[in-house]
Image 1 (cartoon, rainbow, N blue to C red):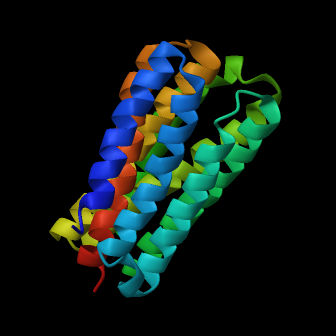
Image 2 (image 1 turned 135 degrees about the vertical axis):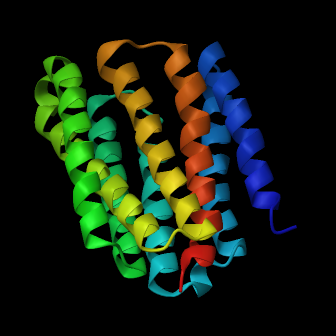
Image 3 (image 1 turned 180 degrees about the horizontal axis):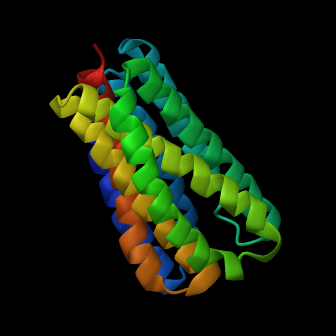
Length: 216
């Protein structure tokens, strides 16, 4: 039964992808809301609340992500900004989780340099299309890049299954956000959601499901 919330999240994600592709507004709202609550429930059932500071940071990140999901149910600019803000704070919370787990300083620094190069290409790709949201998008890229660098640094310090799981989740979240950015700013289309939504919800499940394994 402990994996029931994950199963609910997976089923609702499948419904959500269908709703997005077929423009079914009610199904979209219901399935996305349930999926977001389910990944929080899964983290709790998998022991995140008993994993000390890392677990509490992850729970906080998941709650902020859920708020971002609810904000992004709207296509309007103001809710989109609110969603960016919630997800940005969620990534800060994930950074807090990795910091509390501990990271290898050299591994983190090397990862940060490599990701900075990659992020610069992403910025060149997105910036001509971001308009008034330029600074918000720039801040978001900076924070999510830092989150992935911290995830790598954590795995370098301790390559346990839990830490590798968290690294996979961080990279998956990064890739899902690329799909969101492409859909919003560059090339809107259902393919972004078909790829991005499973990546996003799957990553959140992995964050919640592995943090207790990663905690010392």
